[in-house]
Image (cartoon, rainbow, N blue to C red; front, side, top):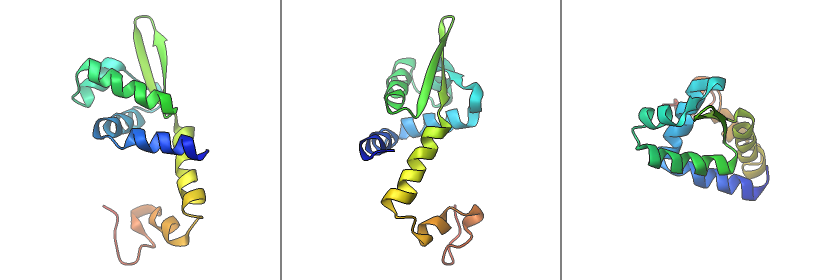
Amino acid sequence: MKEPDALAALSALANATRLRILKTLVAAGNDGLTAGDVARQVDASPSRASFHLAALSETGLISSAKQSREITYRVDFARIGDLIRYLMQDCCANNAIVRACCLPDGEGRSGRRSS
């Protein structure tokens, strides 16, 4: 991932509704959700949800597919992995302390547990 792509993705995720949408779509897995289902689950109006879905789609973090009259949105797990890899390797230079923070249950954190 290149810096401009990472900046666009991080900028898109710096919004509470978009972050909730991403979490919701991650939980939905490969089946994805329709725009209406996403709106209901994140407690947003359909137009507001569509606005945020479009912003996430522009970054490539999610994709959409039209089926009949509905649009189904899915998270792009590979793209999220690219963003995490960019943060870990490019930004943090694969720092051992940062890597340790990614271990299950906060193992390796200097006395701190993950929440």
